[in-house]
Length: 347
Image 1 (tube, rainbow, N blue to C red):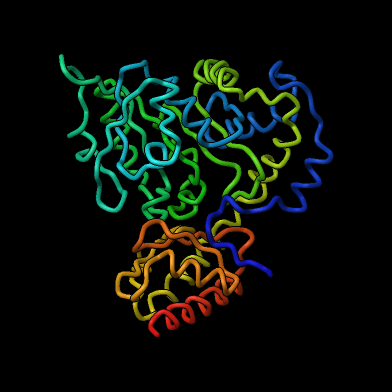
Image 2: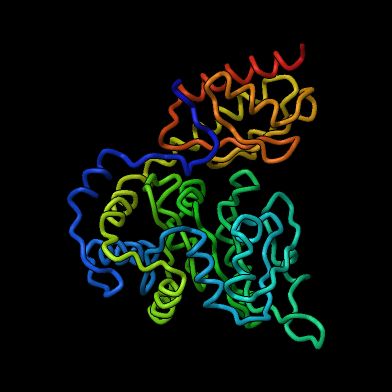
């Protein structure tokens, strides 16, 4: 059976150009900093983000873990939006690896404000861990791909720095935010102390993420990467795909956003499904099934019978994510399957 896979943009497969680049990649030992393709990728990422240096890491989780460790000491506190990926979906890495305590804060639709964060910050106390780091996420995965504006991010960074705090951005999908806002990634992320972004997901590379920051920070990050088992030796075969991702795939993300909008508008027309298409700004959409007469896992199972893969995120809600391997025609076919599955659930 041919599947229409809307579970995540992590399921994308490398493009033919990536596969060719991987086969031709010039390699060396990256632990010795001698892999020329990795070095080119790091230089290009640093250039795109207007930073002194960048570091290639195996995954976004490792990239985030490295940055938290660089900015904290054991027993300190990290303030993060309560549905943030780093807090919920990275195996408690900040606690295990950095010995840091997460302080989750609620927000309106994932779009955290300085006021939200300020209430949770503790700069000095004889009883509580001291806050030293704030982590933001843009786009926000579990807020349906919500986008933090440049102005809001800058305000949070400026106020945090004035308070002596450091700021890390989980920018796994920052290029999606860049497309949605019409701003370069360099301009969007300039005030952050460190940024992680993924070469996989919407950019389509099979493996890898980047962290960017100052040369001194990335030198320290390289040591932490080795400590975590991230010294990948002849990694140029992977970095080659990452270079194609940066040069060829960022420009096509608008297509994924348009397909997500197509899905959102179609879903809004199906009786029993609740979604506001105006809130779908990138490639992720979350919809509610409370009035459909079935729970999300039931709908997921019925969709699978019709060749569509989509994940339940709780009993009431499902998430769909558009990406390189899902076309407009696939989205229309998925909507037809959804209508059939929801209608079947009423009988």
